Length: 434
Image 1 (cartoon, rainbow, N blue to C red):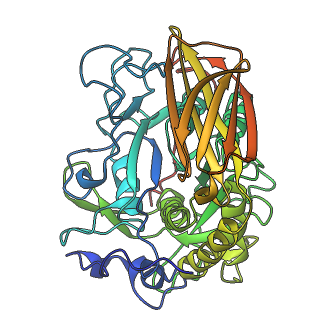
Image 2: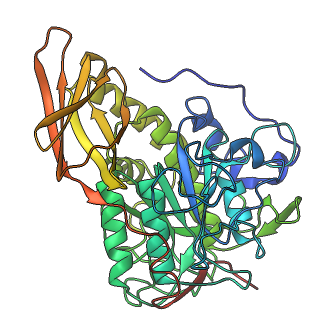
């Protein structure tokens, strides 16, 4: 069964200038909007910051309600101080300055989730939430260590999709380990292919060249139907599976207005937004299955990518069907995270399959029962004060007390944030300057 439309089709003022939104392109976004708007999904933009008060972005800004703004304290014990709307990894200082002095991150964010508010542009997933993870400074420079830290932060703090419109030449083991950590947290990473016009199967660019089941590489296409790759777009039939609109893309500007940019940096957020639409109708699907559906239902193309053109309608339809199947499967549990700090243990638990069959979830630390949570939900969060242990175990039971599923994970201490900032190779945004 498909999800009912959550809202009328957007009619924003500049929508006529967004060629990727128009009917007739192979991206086919208007059809997808009849099924999903991205509600309930958080997308992390790992980039140069964001103009948070932009009228098209402010309605969709993610907020960490466990953090008290401006008090200089790590209230939620996640290792970061005052991370109310995200984190600044361009500095080792405790403060979080999320402003965008470059404009790259703000443009990317608008393509993904600019609000459908009747003004300006509209994002692909116009009801998704924007988590800002700043890794590039005002000159567009960053490090692979900072990006690795940003991926870990986003995955640990609720992002379902991470957009990485970045490119560099360093194959940093820390970045690979962060991608693995994101996979363990069921997070999909969408990466720009890069703008050197090269085959990245032969000349790797990172992070897109990291081979992982939760990474999608995106090449850029040109107006009007979106069927041709521009000369600047990287490609590769092994590394880059899909292509999406990336030339003459109008989106939000750091000045508070709107501007046009081109690059694979502009293509990746179209696919990140599409992934958010898919995740909204299929919240239980593993990241690898989201990726697989996105690739399987791409429109076949005579361009050098493995799957083809990203097809929004086909991918969202497939996700809708897949979630119906998953809901008919027996309940399964997964401990997404289990951490401790200052004698407080926190955990996030996913209930996969038929979550409505679960009446209760019992939480144990080293075999001792410490909490009981109400079932019927896909994601459960628990915070245990003055409780510590080495291993956390969860058990799902039905209304008549039958055990349905169990899972466990090692409890890990929360490490201080920003440790990798400034280390590793250089990395920057993938914008083409012609």
